[in-house]
Length: 406
Image (cartoon, rainbow, N blue to C red; front, side, top):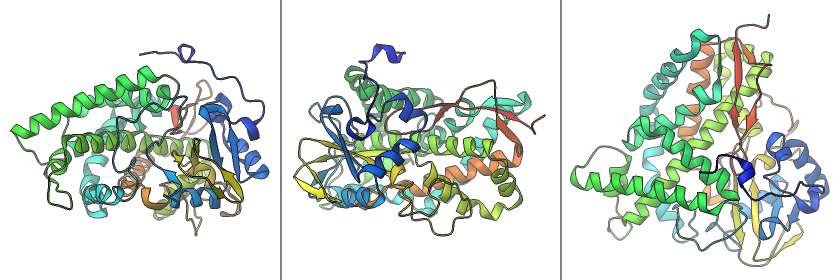
């Protein structure tokens, strides 16, 4: 594994965001909000020649148009990368188009209903407290390394019936697929192969001894004609659950703690008014939505007055849509008691996130348990906050000091 960005092909720095944007540029990674504002002011859909040609809708309306238009935009590729090799590793339903999409998605709905998620909540609360026990006496921690990333990793392992200690493997694969893989195809291919091999072994185990977990649930599922799913379909769905179910929640929990660490008024209000938590979680999801997806243009069409041509990708930035002032008053402010909040953090259209109930629960529990035990905290001025690059944005280093400022 290449452990340094210097091993990857260099992208020249952006000098003109409107005509040459690059979502992997360090300035975008560090603080994308002013860039999105600049792009939105210029045009509802911008284009870059990077990544073999890519559009980006900058307004809520333009993002929504693309997300709902499955005729002109395909989900067969959902990450904007430097190259577009033949598609070999699908992850249904996220990489499926109609008519295959609906049956693939329906198979995944039962384990993620509000009731199913509620049953998992006690385990997630226990995980949060086990993690806090490990560092609370230190008076400080890197909350990304010690807390936020482990919560969804251990929760999804619990659901899948695989050892929670394998979490470090999952974290490495996700880093290689979603970050390094944008520019380094060999790393991406190897990570997907390793993950596929791991889950293939789990499927073989369950053919001998059925278990009561999500892998067996998928193996027992039947398609609309009453046939069991192929091993390839089960593997694809497992890849999706691992990739989509970990990085996203870890990033959203981390961004929420980052916001509360630097916004004492919001932190104090949540401690004093815990009933505000559901509204606050929705607003934190809107303001720091972690996920940017992609579509491939299949047929020429027009989005918000801008022509888009096949052969290009579309960077579908739900986080940018969530900052559109035409849709949200004070879009650039975090208003934890915002009443109307039709955010797009979980996507729009047929591919809206199947795990949204789980993600909300994990965020809520992670913030609640942290505030119960560490009500006063702030960013550590001696440390540095770093953010992930590419498809999912969230803090990867989050140094925090506990207690009030001295």
